[in-house]
Amino acid sequence: MIDLTHIDDLARRLSSLVPPSMREGREELQQNFKAVLQSGLARLDLVTREEFDVQRAVLLRTREKLDALEGQVAQLEGELAGARVPPQAN
Image 1 (cartoon, rainbow, N blue to C red):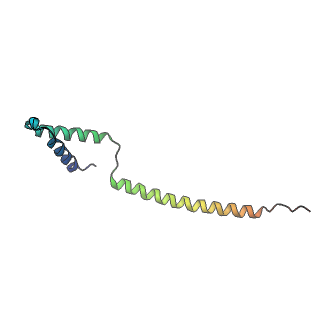
Image 2 (cartoon, one colour):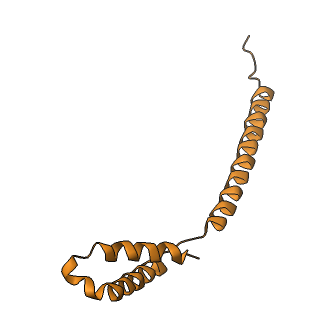
Image 3 (cartoon, rainbow, N blue to C red):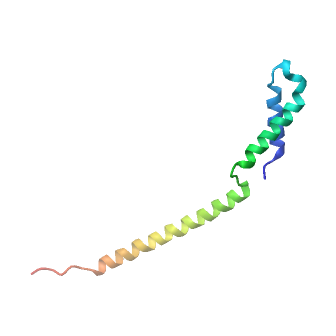
């Protein structure tokens, strides 16, 4: 899931940008920023780094198999083309 320490840090940074005249509600603003950030991120279709790495490894293995199969097809097509020697005209 999402690391909440990053959200807390971002909420703190946002609340520190509030003008001095509005600083008395800083803690409340920080909590509101945090809630909005969590809500927004929860709606995104995100995956963990681990899930991403697993899918990347699967994709790389699939690409290797595809490359090998393409090589086999090219070899078989070459053999088939060599077997089809056109008759010579006299």
